[in-house]
Amino acid sequence: MLSAAHSPVMTEEVVKALGPSEDSILVDATFGRGGHTRALLKYLGLKGRIYAMDRDPEACAIARDWAEGESRLTVIQAPFSKLSDELLRAGIGGQVSGIVLDLGVSSPQLDNAERGFSFMRDGPLDMRMDPSQGIPVQDWLADVSEEDLIGVLRRFGEERYARRIARGIVNARNETPLTTTGELSSLVDACVPTREPGKHPATRTFQALRLFINQELAELDAVLPQALDMLEPGGRLVIISFHSLEDRRVKRFFHDAAKGDPFPPDLPIRAKEISPVILRPSRPQRPSDGEISDNPRARSAILRWAQKSPSGQI
Ligand SMILES: C[S@@+](CC[C@H](N)C(=O)[O-])C[C@H]1O[C@@H](n2cnc3c(N)ncnc32)[C@H](O)[C@@H]1O
Image (cartoon, rainbow, N blue to C red):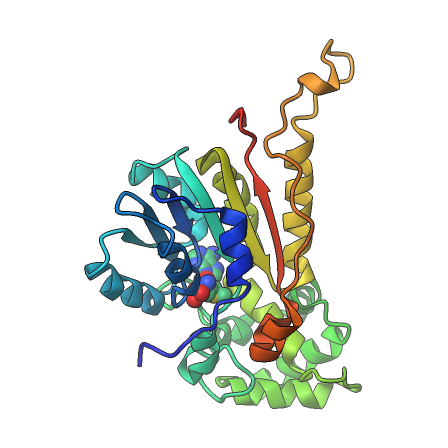
């Protein structure tokens, strides 16, 4: 089944930050179910364009159906780490007015048990956003060493019980292969000695495995400089993160880009002559209480945006 809804997060804030005009060229690099694209299209005239990107074939199938009746929409199925290649191929490198990245997974990905993302629904232990690339989590767990597993749980899940969980997984899989999300979540539940209020004990383990198997932090590191490069002078980049591992990277990236290139201190250049890549980035923005009560998935969202310097230097 392809459809199923996704309630877009912080849509008003995304539109305000991007400030679209009638002939803007925009990129929604995480199309999902197109909630942000839909809101942005309302501001575009006949010459405006949205390039919708996603690595998930189901998301792209929906976008393509839509694009058949919407000439302002172009669909690109690719990981956003290929943003520059794809936009250069489309002939819009350096001409993009705004780019939005709404990170992580969509509700349809979580809700479809067959995708294997959720500890709430029993399904095959897969978790790939693009099931034609890489390997499913169950194949990785079948071979991984205990030490490597501990590293992934710590690095991508900030899991304090990484050692116990990794040992539990390795012992179990040495008996019988782990093939379902239900088996993994019960196993983690049994390994974790304490409970965080309001949080399923397998939350961090599932987050860690998902981030690792989809290389989500490496994707983010790769897309940030490309996104600035693809913007026109004065263009805007908006990013919504859902946990501190992502938000820290975005914050640091914007901070560095706003400082400009570090020149050796002995060069005869004054600070005001160093042209920063972006103007001062926005403060972090959070969803309103109203949005969080309508859409609990929004509660951990953090939006940051920045404008490429009008001088266009990079
Ligand atoms: C939170 S959802 C976006 C929801 C979307 N803004 C909407 O309103 O429907 C994130 C989407 O980004 C896609 N995605 C995540 N990482 C990606 C990557 N590295 N490259 C391309 N797409 C990615 C996922 O497949 C998912 O469809």
